[in-house]
Amino acid sequence: MNILDTTHDQFVDAFRRRYGKGSHISTPVYRRVMKTGKTAFHDLASFAGLAGLAGQLEADLVLSMGRLVKRVSDGKAIKFVTRLADDLDIESVVIPMFRRHTLCVSSQVGCRMGCRFCRTGKMGLLRNLTAAEIVGQVYIARHQLGIDIRNVVFMGMGEPLDNLDNVIQAIRVMADQRGMDIARRYITVSSVGLTAGIDRLARLDGTPVNLAVSLNAPNDDIRSRLMPVNRIIPMAVLQASLLRYPLAKKSALFMGYVLVEGINDRREHAKALARYLAPMTVKLNLIAYNPAPGSEWRPPSADVYERFHAWLVAEKVFVRRRGEKGGRIMAACGQLGGKNTSFDG
Image (cartoon, rainbow, N blue to C red; front, top):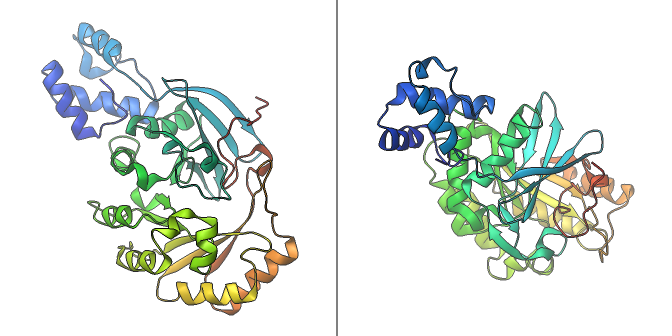
């Protein structure tokens, strides 16, 4: 039985069909695995007199998440590598936040969106992750690294809305209160702007998850240069989809703007960006470009960054500085993936 890709109710149903036992047996099993990471059950009160079943379940239970093979830290962010059953690797990043740790999870091995500033995009798409492989990143961070993960952001390798069935199932598993219990208001899905996926995510049952969009440009010309997806889904079409997205109370859409010196950093760019964002309830994260080896572009100087930030503030944009976290260990925005990753431990 693969437990990491099932909600509590799905696990209870599968347990009943396989072993003929009800929730008084299966619920403690689900809670133990998801909340503590333990996979031995002989000491559970519900298994009193059922040692044979406990042994059988321990033999049958599958955690098909891959195995932790590497980790590296810069003293703040932690990047870890999971090796999957087919020997492909994915990277995940733990980011320390005020009172909480955020886990940046991957949803694919590689990515086919081809964003020119992103190292993962240069890999191409190798395959989608299963729901268990996505949830497994939380399991590893909590139960093998011992980090109390409370926020999850789908901002690692891959485009989450290009693997939406598995991402939705992973969200349901993570949010299940009888298991990992990560509230949906603390889950954020980031996308390049696949509108069909955004519209489908908007119809997700229950409380909506947070939506973040990697915008990075003030107009179609620049965005199409940076992000090939814009040639198919221009900014006006994306905006219409975002205006339909349901927001939780006191929430907002999150937008990412990677500032690249000489590309999207002029005053007219700030004005055009403000006009585009005006109809929406938005929190904009201004991110200095994080160069990868061999990059054709430069990160903005401190003066360029501060000047652009000031222009946005003057245009009454709700903008937040996003300081670099993990850049020294190739764990910052746009730096995950690739064959030349170097690890020290």
